[in-house]
Length: 159
Image 1 (cartoon, rainbow, N blue to C red):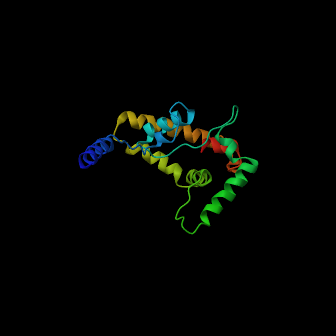
Image 2: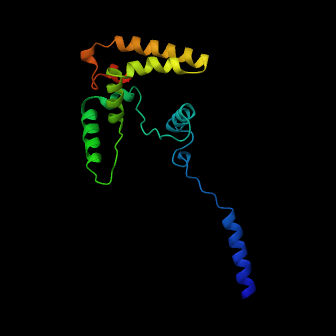
Image 3: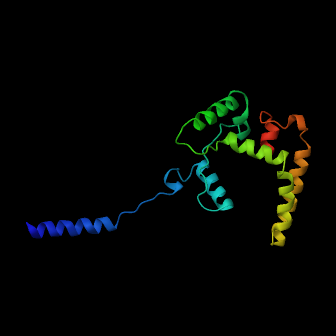
């Protein structure tokens, strides 16, 4: 009996060493889905497992549709509901991100764009940032100030 218990314990111990745990985001997404592919591209660009991209759209729709009509009202309601939870310390929803980007571009963000291009130690990075800043500022100038609101799809696209 004792020999059988020892043999069983040894077999179970060996099996225990073969267990693998996957806790990355790839455990939650189908590897061939567009969301997973976009997530990998996002991680490659910004480094590491920084976020899971949770939104997908039907044909002919895009992220700007999240901020139109009833969707905008629902995002506002949802954000406020999360803020009311006592255990929640901070809330960052797509709406909060857009409000932050909106405030940056209407305020100190323009200068931040310009200053960032001058601080890049890599000449190729500097050239890329300067081209991006030029494009961003040109696009910003195309939207009149009174149309720079979260319900305007062109403004959302710029943000």
